[in-house]
Length: 151
Image 1: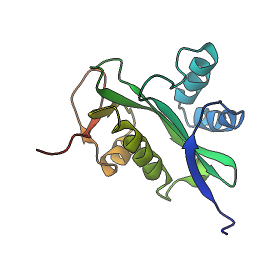
Image 2: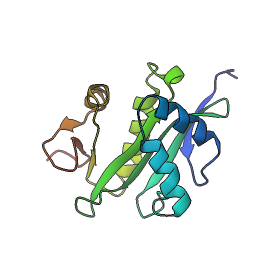
Image 3: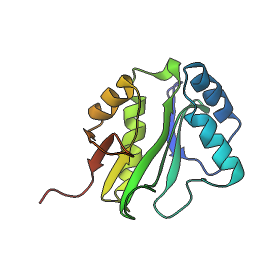
Image 4: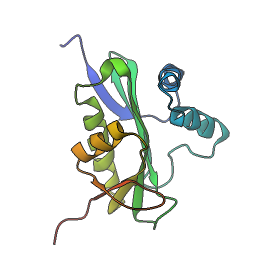
């Protein structure tokens, strides 16, 4: 058994470990994990509607990445939205973020035909292109990926 076990699993209870990631994200100028925590606590978004999920990546029991999937409130009911994807600085560069996004897309394919997202950094944009998303021109999304089979 490896001493460096990685597990990606659904989060149904927001553990205090998320506050460690949130604090790190804030130091990098990102507030989206602060919104995740606030929305979870006030009940406005718990990633628990049909097709939605919140996944965490854990290494040796420690939360090192997080990401969610919701219905896109700016699009139709068959459109999903990636939200709040964050990988701890020390865990970057190991394809962990890509693995997390892939798991979110596998989950999305059960309910949605397209997944959209919005990112405001060049690094985020490049990351999502590497994950197979296409850049789009839209007021509410910067990238999209079709999950429908090519016809």
